[in-house]
Image (cartoon, rainbow, N blue to C red; front, side):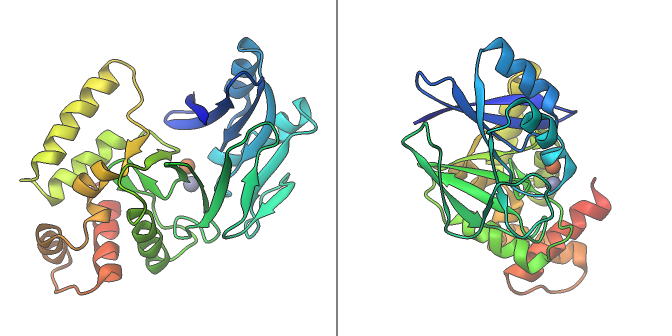
Length: 259
Ligand code: ZN
Ligand code: FE
């Protein structure tokens, strides 16, 4: 099993580092910046064996070139359908990533929406979901569609409830503020806000998060909840039916009137 720890980058990115017992070779997920990764590898005497990319945005891919220069044999996995220089192992739905120094493998899910070719990496009880699902929220819809994003989130929602979700940004507090606006009476959201405030004040990351907690507190996974539906309809000023319409209203609400 992997040991997984974050390396913070930029203002609020996390570059996840996957290490397996006793082995100096590691993998990193979405290295937007090479500097913190190189510093960490050096201080912990680790060598980079693989880079896993979820989507093409620069804050997830900007470090590839320098990491490859430092570790010329590194394998660079990433979505086949996105323009990402430096990928050596292009991936599509169902592909398996077998890291050579590690017995565990990861399976590829295509979860478009934030971008049109966004992928996630699923392991035993965990998911690296990039900018698709965030703790308490979800990514914006850029070059994918609202329908794709709604379907991708539903797919994540159907994983086992104890799945740990490793997203790529620390956006939890902001997201929970919106969640509370949607569902002011939801006690699980209030409790999570308090817990998150504590973690952040102690400098702890608020991710990974548990899917079971997301299902109770993340409005974008709660589009079947009557309170969420009523709030979205009130914002949209019209009746909404179906998951895509509901999701789309929530996403537009947060984009236009919250952030
Ligand atoms: Zn992104
Ligand atoms: Fe990002």
